[in-house]
Amino acid sequence: MVAEPDALLKEALDALASADDPAALEQWRIAWIGTRGRMRTVMAQLRDVPAAERPAVGQRLNALRERIEQAFADRAGALAQEGTARAASSGRGRIASTIDPTEPGIPVGLGRRHVLSRTIDEIVEVFGRMGFSVAEGPEVEDEWHNFTALNIPPDHPARDATDNFYMGGSRLLRTQTSTVQIRTMERMPPPLRIIAVGRVYRPDTHDATHYSMFHQVEGLYVDRAVSMVDLKTVLFQFARAYFGPDAQVRIRPSFFPFTEPSAEVDMLMSIRGTPTWVELGGCGMVDPNVFRAVGIDPEAWTGFAFGLGIERIAMRRYGIPDIRLLFENDLRFLRQF
Ligand code: FA5
Image (cartoon, rainbow, N blue to C red; front, top):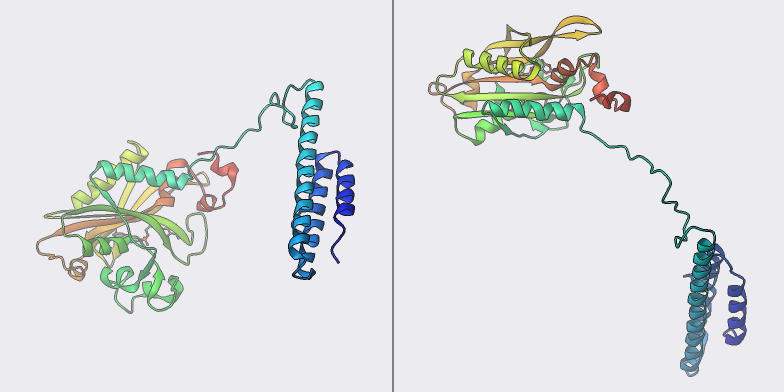
């Protein structure tokens, strides 16, 4: 049996008349014309009406629903007007809400670029002035680009499972940006003058100068008759342009499978107040085996390469004593830059 429309209408209007603030009006709306309200239940009862009577009953119920919805709209309009009038009489002009435009604003904290991102931009800029363009490569690498093409033989300890983040198969997170040297030489013929900047990953124990994820900037210069003098010149020019005329850089003989001869680049920095030579990166002349792996004739071309740790550069530049500060996201630290 369908509810009696007149009785329903009266009940709805009585309840509506006693809703005298926005919260009560909303409660009424939910109870009567909301998606689970009384009117929805009443309309659903149409299903039980015999087919012959359904059109007539349906018309009456639709009229009832329209009447109730109209009553709601009228009541909502009346309440809004009352609110405006109340606000006006309390001296707040025509603004009916609780907003006080004279109150001081809440300061919005402005973000800034992370000190590492700024360092990367600055490095790209300095090398850009020396004619180096930016090359890119993936962080998930294969053994060919991370080791084999870089003249690192299959039994070399650098490939050890404890020194790398292997990801199954021959995939691993790259341990050095030297992978981008290979990718660039595979793609483009010499002469080449590029830098590659990005994240590298090693399972190193965290301490003041080591982290398991860090950034490197790789440089590669391939041309006719490039020499070690060109390499030293570029590194010293970078140090001076970036750290100022007093920059202290030290180059000492070392070994990397992909360069011959190889050297270590150190710079002087303060660690907990004590001046210390910190290893900034490695460099050397591109090994002929690397040229052969990428199909470049080592008799016709020579080149140099270097790879520097960007965290160490930022630490030197900004006097940051501990690499871990760069990754803790402590705003008291980050706001200083
Ligand atoms: C290399 O990664 C070579 N690919 C560099 C290179 C490129 C040599 C081209 C020759 C030619 P090495 O493992 O020394 O070399 O790392 C380079 C620099 O990365 C280090 O000197 C240091 O500044 C930084 N570095 C290395 N390990 C870490 C670490 N765990 N945390 C922070 N920085 C690191």
